[in-house]
Length: 298
Ligand code: SAM
Picture 1 (cartoon, protein in one colour):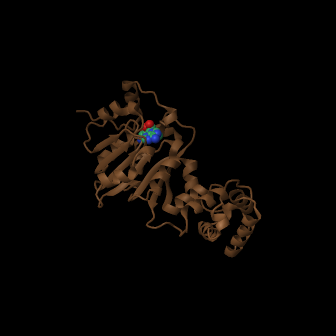
Picture 2: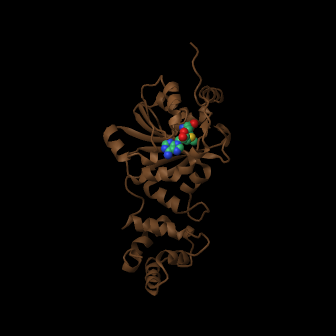
């Protein structure tokens, strides 16, 4: 019997699209992978083996899902587009270790999924060729929930991956870098050219590998305050830290005085720009400013 080619090939993808009369929805970020080597590299980056349970986000027509099913112990995939149900059911029929849940991943109860479906000994990896319009909320939802995920292997727009892994004093460094670095160690595994998708997107992609930190990178007194401060500090990148902080905390004399005292206590010049501050400096500053009732309640 002739073996079917991988779903992630131009000919098989074309054949599936034709067979089911599928039209891809741009609004759902539907760009399907047609290059099996990319998947081989993704599997290697996630160290996917028969002891690994994988949560996949957005299986599409099953390009990555198929390869995961062959290499992992079990795959649970979340897909929002119900039109893909007959396709996935038929094309992935040879694999009995795949379950597709037709639900928006942003509405999934992740802690409940983990409690009910996984053993404490399972090695869990989240893998995805992400729908690009919601890359950040998907990742933040997972990492903020502090789930026992061993690693994340996520394909996304190259620019977003660069922002998530940037260093201080670079144009890509910002509040997203800080949020990601707080919870995880992140690195770009490899760059993916836009030519390996159908339809072809306008930009290149990158595969990002995130590893959850056992404890956050820095100690902060109040996480909400810390993230509010870091987001606000980068609001207008060309403005000074002082101007951005005033925009967060207000321009009352009390707030100004508390800010001046706080900055001085941690030795950070008000004339600096946010992109020059390290994550440790942001944490120190947040912890110092949080001591002030005026700023804390602003
Ligand atoms: N994994 C396939 C591949 O690599 O060819 C498809 C990737 S495509 C970039 C993104 C997929 O995510 C699409 O199938 C889309 O329908 C799905 N998707 C979009 N929004 C979603 C959401 N909120 N929850 C779950 N899946 C979603």
